[in-house]
Length: 597
Image (tube, rainbow, N blue to C red; front, side, top):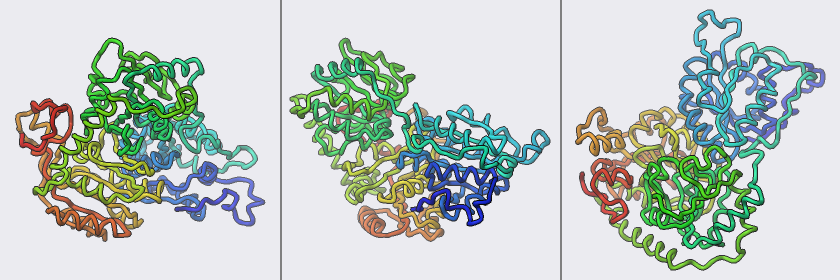
């Protein structure tokens, strides 16, 4: 990755006599003070001053050219999730800003500090019908924590500091700044402004908070007194990097841990207390059982939204059940359920303090926990028929099984919303080696996985990025295959080719009496698309081809693309709780989900 260069190294020898710099140069120096290594973007006529300043930084900041502004925001999002630092992206005025909306909205709703710079038109042209003129700041106000126009060069340092402070503190989120032409080109007197950075805001969550001693004493008492305690780990655990603390607390209290989709990877999946994913999408039946039978539920970094609670029906109302919640955002505490106790604070810090208040020795697993593990073992045993199926078209379950057998350590697995998600959340196995799963869960926009593997590679070059996506997602992001080839990102891309918008077609089957409309694509060999960009590619139609292609793809040292012909969701109903109920099945009783509906 890029070697950081101190800001003082940017100036030539004669710079000692320099008394001013341009706004664009000041912005780049500020980014270096914040230790920014990479920025993703698309060039435009309004962004020329920024590009010149980045160029003159002599490689101190890597600019990654992408093929679509939406992709730039998705790359910044994935980078931020994995680097635990703000992710930066930029685009030109007008259409560039419009194309950036989906990724910024997803990052903000997912508590990811993505920073978007848009370059505006000249201030002199405002209100005169200038091409690409747009009130960028108002466009992004509803989908960011902060959106502003920087109308003078000397305001760049303080505004950038403010934006990064807002992005990384409290509930992290996206911010947006507009830089008109004059702001980028006019001089700043070096003696008049400070180009310093706030070190705390170079990562997130910044300025973390702890719970009060009195509240933590109450929390510890509730936990220690529980007979059937379950910990529900949400995405906030991964954001806070509180994985080790959750594991330690679970072992001390003998408490099973279930996760939301965003909380996957909290604990090694093979751990006796790790029961898997809870909620509507890709759930584990034994995880649902644990939540429903618990007398005390501790939610950590989980907003208790519609998916993880199956539209607020899990857990069901039960007299005497205690619900405890830890979250850094006080506004989500007790928002959807009646909490027995709410703790406002950072997950890692609160759990660190809590570990000082509970018994220090690990608690033996209760008869209830042992029974849950027997149910878990039965689940995996009964899933073998799907995981080892030789049927054609290939089942998505078989694809995930073969992927599990070959996952490098560590890996970053990134999935689009849609076809791959329920099978990844149910069947993917992570070993607690720093591997992560990323799935855009707030708005479910397609086209995330392919660009996101680029951001993942810049954030975690130690981990092999793996992208999984369906036909709809590929159609929305295939241009970024060129980006992967140009950068030689060693991603393994797995395309589930079932010839349709699989998620929507299944919903039409369940709720529209199979009146299918506008969901089917023309069949095609998508490996040829990847090969056209110079990417090693395989067409996969049989189990033998699948195993061979995966072996060769993981042995390859550059980007690899597998076009796998898979059975549509509509004929092999995936583990989505609400869908199974709509199909007349008992989601918690048996796992024969392969019948045609």
